[in-house]
Image (cartoon, rainbow, N blue to C red; front, side):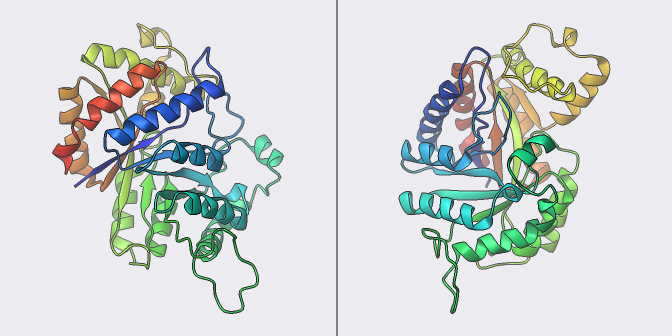
Length: 329
């Protein structure tokens, strides 16, 4: 059984504002809830004009307030940017408002550049303390201990489920050691996917939160009525990946007719490698390819990203994918 979930970076398309992007994300979350998706996550990024989810806990609250049953969470909070106590208070508050519906995925990367990291007033070496910070956060969200003098209010004993996110072997080892669910960011960094999954499953230690391993795998999925239309829509993601290689991080561009005129051969090779875990085409095309991917990875859950310029096309893609869910259960 493989569950389907949604990763939404709250993309800001060219000609749109962050407010537009946030309202579109709420509409998408409501549609995905009605379609039976397991969870809906947003991620922390800073100083990026094309992503509107920097205040991640605020966005989680906005989406949770506009939905009723689907799990809403962070995929993730970049913990080195924050004190564990503050995150425990924020997500303890969210759990108090929306009990049983909040997830907290934790990443070790800064989610930004070094200059912005300094503007966040964090130590550039804070990532080295990530394992201890996770344990501290876990303790703040757990039961109050005898003689514990500092507690998160709200937060104490909220038991918000923690996830470890990663795109390398480090996260898989930590998630296994702590007995936490693991989400691999193969939607943009797929190189170490299979090795990370093997390490996670082979070394997993059961914990109070999780009795057996649970691996979520990130993928890009773009589905349209025809292969040609889907490939056309996908050029938005291809342009975005190419722009990242060029050091440009603008708003989400509209699709173009011929991607080959946009990138160089070297850029094509690098961008295509980044987007290797992408499934693009008609429903039949994607169904076949996605089934093979699930069999190869043994993913317990797919975290599906679909950053398209056209909001209607993005919702349509998630509708097509939702129609396949029963075949993966």
